[in-house]
Image (cartoon, rainbow, N blue to C red; front, side, top):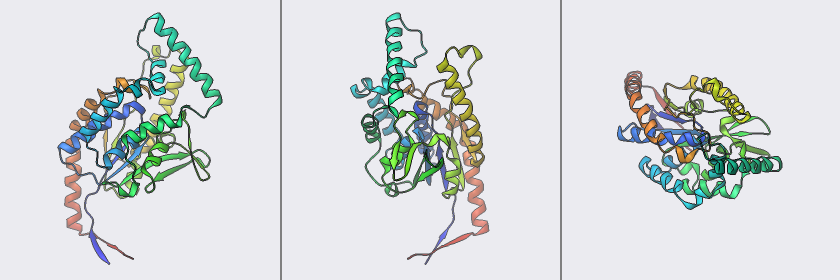
Length: 311
């Protein structure tokens, strides 16, 4: 048997939000620069994608480069994800573009009536494979946990072992957009259905200090509810905000980058959110350092020890 001293394990909980999750990269950049040690990462949806890549050894700078290259690639520009972004484009566009978007909307609506997801499983998987290595979760450099939802049991599923790509794919399977994954008797979908920001997961997996990153949209004005899509989107945002408030009860520090009103699929407009994530994290640094300092003083004084049995 061996003895392990308990130190200050910092858990990072990265919330879901589709394209808005690119702000997580800015958060990671600042934590790297300031040498804030991260002991574990828990991620939901886009937070699982970014968190898995980082936990596997991809630096924040490398992640930013990979995202830029992917968004500028022909594969993305001709993808269904890009088409979905165009159909929800709220910017002023010309008549030709409006007609194009109208028929795209009709096409995807027809698809949604007969398929469990608008995006093909193959296309979505290619995106996952671009960012996430083909390794087991237990082989990541930083302990990692991904959150998904079982649509059969309505339970939260936490992946802490097994194929990393599968766990991330399950966590990112946005309802309606991406087909759920079958896993035994389970049908797995987006972790954000039950846990938008997995602060509680980070806590239960051993974090002494939990830093939660929230990438929810800013409130909208009542005159922005112009269509059925706007109303549906806003209703979803309201439900998410209440879920997030519950999730954050387990967080010690909350980082909330200003992500604007971007929708789930607005990836080509989201690169600027890296800077927004960095800015919000710099503003939170005094709280982070105080939390770390406080716990570092507490544990040596108490001399708390944990005995770990081997074999």
